[in-house]
Image (cartoon, rainbow, N blue to C red):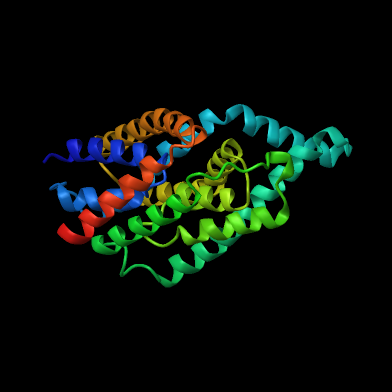
Length: 272
């Protein structure tokens, strides 16, 4: 398979899987095992980061109004003290609190290479998909009652701890934070929004490191175009798959992902 086709396929996989609770990184590894991608390990690692950047851009586009409002109100509150900005300021603080556990743990894990031996173990990825299926099954009928104004410090901290679990290869980041949110009785729409806004700070850090690595590779113009194409594809696919996932989640149809993770997890463990 040509490198261009491989980049297109992985851009689609990353884009679609990033927006749903099934582990995009795990599916990239599964795709690598199923298809002769003809890519080096460096190309695969860099591509994962660059397509993640595409997904980040899609999330920012979808939440652009919320992001602008949150940033404006956060700084306006500390400047004026006006209580009309207090709700969004607290929400920003809870996003920061929820980011800290995975941020600190991620630095430690990366520095020590704690999960390096698992990242290429496709059967372990299959097992983690089964774990994801179990947790999604447990919360599939939860409705919750808390909107963004009712989120507490403890809610944010626990959701952050759930995001920390997603550092384990094969565990979905969006899946783990949505499970954490719904365990804390956030309603479905609030769980969705908090989960994907929480994706932004972690993804920005990852993307900056990835761009730095990409520059150091001194790639040809052709390869840079391939990476750019994969990023654009991931962005477009993430945008539409997120809109689809939000409808599915708000309608209480997480059972689709329970079944999907169960079938794929079993198949991977038994046959790959």
